[in-house]
Length: 144
Image (cartoon, rainbow, N blue to C red; front, side):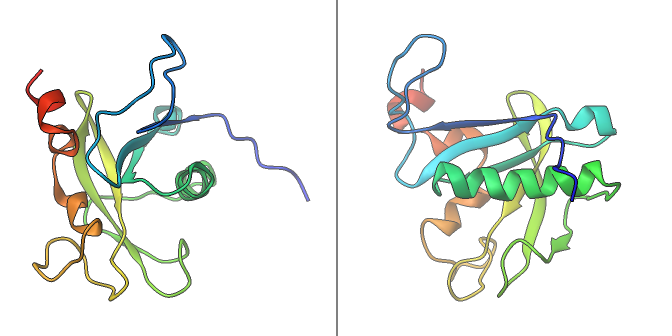
């Protein structure tokens, strides 16, 4: 079987991780939040993807690379779409959000009750997925 050619980048910005450029340890996100996103889907005429729940780097990469491989294989996604195949027991939803002045498709994962963040019963931290990017940062960072 041919090994997939991952020709995009998964960029994960999360608390406790040093910056590749300056070495400063990131500590600006609220608890359980991150900004993980792809760069490179434009070569497939597709929006990039984003995930804001601070799963392990390995799990974040698995989720975002799965979407990337699907796009590379010709699949197209749009905002509001429910997608099966990321988890065995539930779909995820894609919503359009701004990430650093560009529109991305954010992967929205339901909580353990399969409740999505637009339902008031959605549990933390899954409820934070409906927040704009700037609200994922601690107050002092968001005001800077």
